[in-house]
Image 1: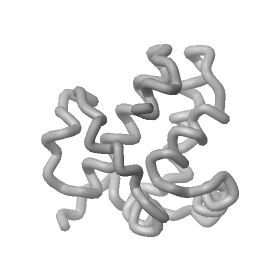
Image 2: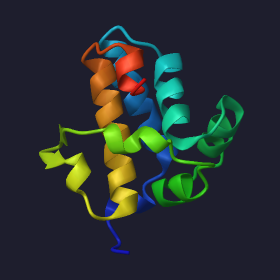
Image 3: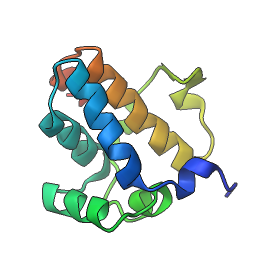
Image 4: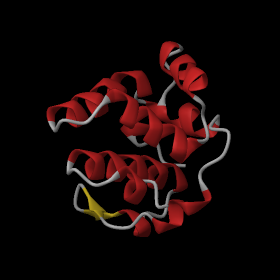
Amino acid sequence: MSGHRIFTTKFSSVYPLYVQKAERKGRSKDEVDRIICWLTGYDAAMLRQQIAQGKDFETFFAQAPAMHPNTALIKGVVCGVRVEEVEDPLMRNIRYLDKLIDELAKGKAMEKILRQ
């Protein structure tokens, strides 16, 4: 696996940015948490523990209980990159999360964000 800088970035340092992005657009921290838990299989307590322990993105996703089976339905562009075309599995998971947070900030309904 390539040593991309984001892989070793602490999830806890990026998490508040996800929350800020959502809150600036009138969405909530609870919605951000719901998206993260849906994507990764963490429950709220496990998510808080991962953040408190300062896990990096690589560890955060490696320890995720189960990526949601509907992640293949996440399509689109984030940071100029088509998420469905990202080859590295870890980078693809990070891009999935970025895409879901973008959708939340753009006002999309939770049912659509969670691919229900």
